Image (cartoon, rainbow, N blue to C red; front, side, top):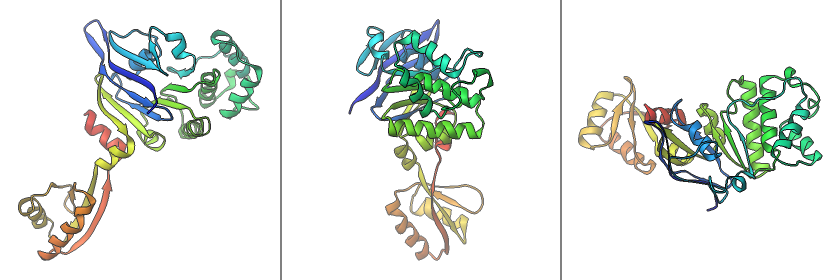
Length: 299
């Protein structure tokens, strides 16, 4: 396993407030990694720690095999990032903005500008002044800027913030393309849980600076699968499953029961119900969404 980001007991305090609390993250090469948490949970502080913009109070940060802050220059050489909303010179063109930003971070050959503009679907608009760009175009220009140094890692803090549904869809498709076609590792902080569920293979959820979950999206969702049951005598079926079979069953409304069991055990449950004279109208697999699980963990 090749780790692109690794933190070990990373902690940051501001006066008496703990913003990041002994956080240990592992982002693997090729991940599209969702970084989730409520406002104030410590996501933006963690991203600033990863980029060397603030120093940790304790703990360790490693990017692409280089420790921060000791080797910050080497660590960030292959990192592109968007922290908060990207800012540009309004009266300059998109291409002129890219040239100015690249001059601050290192030499970029002219073909690279056209290349990144093509990747973010701004070809043909690079000579328009940024003041006429839509919010979505500005976000894509920010991505183009982050891609200039040919990064191996992209760190994006709320890249779809303020976008309409079309803009969100464009950014989502663009991130998938960058991950699959360019082989980038992406750490993505977002509040749009349904988007994270669609594009991320691994996630971390934090709350009050502490790690609540880290792992694959698939494992989290599969761990939370339930089976919905509808029978002719719902109350008696509930009593039978809970009292006689001692199964983890609960009610949700007047018509359905829910069981959290391995799929292999459901056939036996159905057989038991039928043997006791219940008419089973429905047994269906009911998987929670990432949003459902997220709110259970953080509230």
